[in-house]
Length: 242
Image 1 (cartoon, one colour):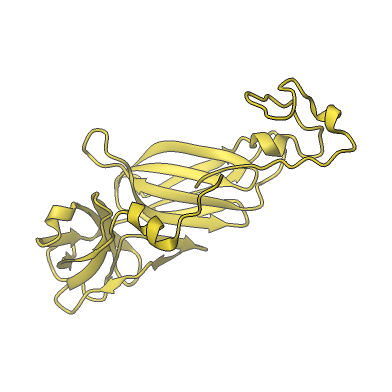
Image 2: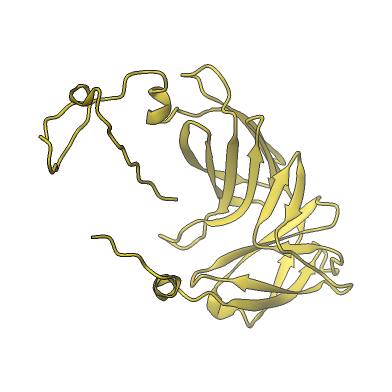
């Protein structure tokens, strides 16, 4: 028998989410206020242009106040000037929300490249890249900062120096992860062409399905093969998570 959870019951299993205000100043390298800069926890890059998600804009004195959903863990907050030529990033823990924070703008490092599936000899039709800041603390999860979706299997992002996790995925290809270090001494990091391996399902397009491996069965023999079901209705239900 299946049990359906009501919306209220589902909410009981979810951790409460409350936005907390984080305030401070964005300054230039010489300490002068950076007015008109934008502050956000996530930045989207499309065609080389950066757009902040739910951003706060600094006042003439560089001051900002920005509501952050911490989800009970630290969050990376990135600021960029209006021209998108300089940026800075800080990490704020939930218990630091009430403090005053300073984000110092400096040169950005451009990361670019493209994707190819060597096994299929063509580019994926859609790809997405996330760059997540790698915290200094041992065992802490990377903090997502920026993303770049593409239908041309290309990516271009610009971020402050630091260590990041590069995570790429796309249509019919497997996830690709690696850590990259961005340094102010190297303003352009060209990753070139990154090979993405196809998924197991994509490898079977147009081919007979692989053998079934049944561990438990009810009403049929565990050793059944697909050929035994020829001419009969069969329902295959696939489960997944994101």
